[in-house]
View (tube, rainbow, N blue to C red):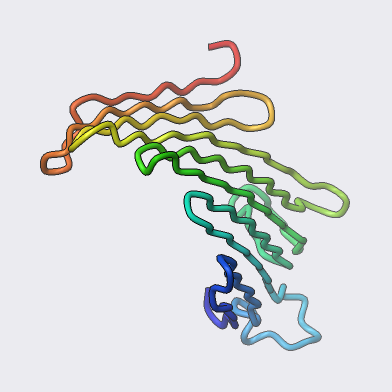
Length: 171
């Protein structure tokens, strides 16, 4: 993002945070009386790490961004937002369990919007030596969209087995 002003706080007792705000980018030649949209955004995130536990949260808000380029013929601006929550926990330094939740909303016109809620659950087990098993699943508010499993024997970063399953309702 061009013309972005950010502040990153130092890590204190396992907490760190960042905030950001953008100045107008796509409207640099526009005057305040112009009907050209003057996009802006702000975002914030906070993380906490203490031993095997990691927690994180983030939020981002857009004003007058055209996030649906090609889908709408006359975008007049709007407010779009997204927040994310994430967590991971390591058990005995060989197993890491993680989860994420994402909620995104975008205005598509006056009084109308679309939204997506997504989630993911993941596990990463360092079995022994170069052997590793990873598995996870992700979905949205109504269904499971993907299951991934990967067994690795690391020697030059090669996977010896792996696979995933994707599908919609009714598959």
